[in-house]
Length: 181
Image (cartoon, rainbow, N blue to C red):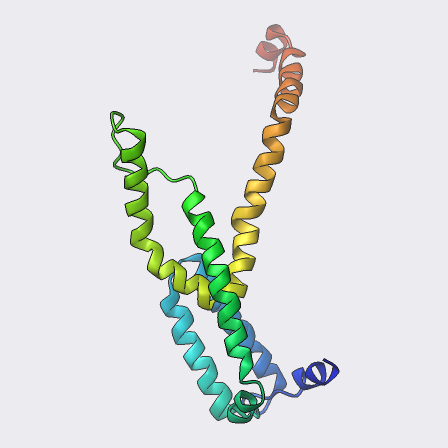
C-alpha cells in the first residue's frame, strides 16, 4: 500500500505530475457526467482516450501494469456485475408512472406499462452500472438513497412540523396581517 501511495505522485503525463492529475480529474468528471445523464458513450470514449494518453504520453507502462495486476479487471468486472444486479432490482422498485396511463387501466396493466418502459432503458443502464460501478454507486448514494432516507425521516416527522407551522400561522391574527399589507 505504501508503494502505491509513493507511485501516485510519480505518474507523469506530458512531462508533468500536474497534467496527469488534471487529466485524471477531467476523466473522472466525464464519468460522473456520463452516469448522471445516462449516456455510457461518453464514458467509453473518454476511457479509450485516457488509456491512449496513459500509454503513449505518460511514464506508466500499461503492458507491465496489466501483466502484474492481471486479476484486477476480473475483480472489477465481478463486483460490477453484482452491483448491476442489485441496482437493477432497485430500479424495478423505483416508483414510476408511464406518461400514457389511463385512469381506467387496471393495476396489472399499469404494471405492464411500467415494465415495458423500464425494459426499454435497461440494457444501457445495466452496462453503465456494470462498467462504471464505483462512479454509479457514489452517484446513486448521493442522488437516490440519501433522498429516500431524508424523505423517510420527514414522513415520520411531518405531523410535528405541520403542527408547528400551524401554531405559527395561528399566532398571527387576521387584523395584524391586514396591517402589514
